[in-house]
Image 1: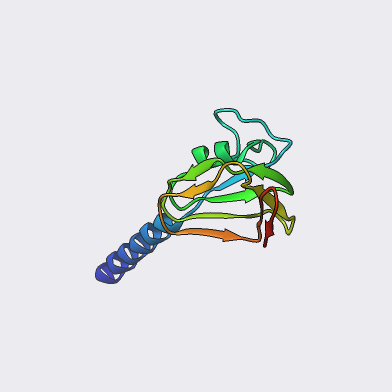
Image 2 (image 1 turned 90 degrees about the horizontal axis):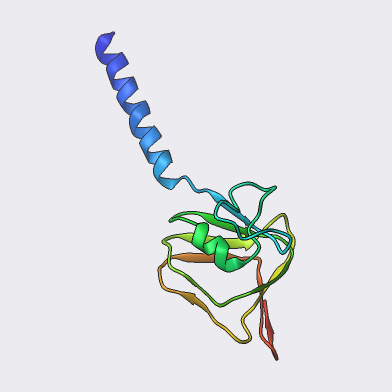
Length: 122
């Protein structure tokens, strides 16, 4: 009985470690937000700019963009970041005068529209 209990506890601990490694936080970004030092961690206090959302993110986080237009001009330098829309709203990344630079892979961009002065890309 003691060996079986010990094995079960060890397996539970290993599973816990496995799930904690892939755990991600959500960082919320909205045009109605504010770029404070603690923004983005809760739905009711989103960051205002994509740049601040990226700065607040850590490896493996997901940045959720509310509907709106966001200037690019930032560098995604975190590992395994996901950038996506929030609740089927279509955000637009305006990269007309400044690029969105990705310096760490992988990065997933899902359900976000890209735009520049003369072109739009889905």
